[in-house]
Image 1 (cartoon, rainbow, N blue to C red):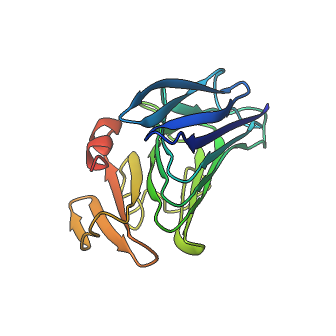
Image 2: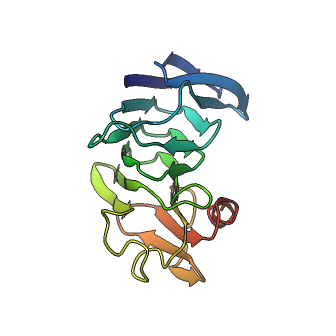
Image 3: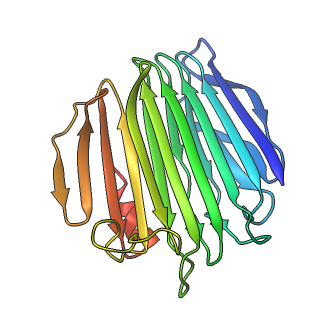
Length: 238
């Protein structure tokens, strides 16, 4: 299955945001929900199971100057096996213009047994824009070993590299559960905050949570591992 969804937001000139384009194809269905404090809010609704191996799904987001958008998903995304040898792909690309704000806060990606999935995000953030970008991965459903999943995130700030991060788990990723990667934890994730108005905090490690200031912009990255999705979310709520 192939699907494309697109979201374009513009400032309305009155302190709010209007969605000038909101288009989706099954299973990527976009639904606008009530705004919160002038921030346009959109939920991504899965119109079918999956992603299944062989699916190629793309989401494009553009937030114009001065606009503010928050994007959620209504439920976790479960990557499932499909035809042998096939890979499922979910690609998100976003452009955040000067003075704009984007909060990408989806529910978790679950790598079910037997899946082969690539989650790829590419984000371009203009100088003076703000971003909150969260990725969470659960390695297998309850009581099962995980399938194969690769999560790759690329973020540029003011035209320069800010973050390049990749994680591979599953049977084709040697050592992923070892002490150098997840240390046996079934849940992992990260939260990137880019905010010119916020003081960048010093690096710190607290248990399985690390806070890292980034050199390429007014940005801080939190990374965490956890025994379950609920604990992981608590670690990545800042």
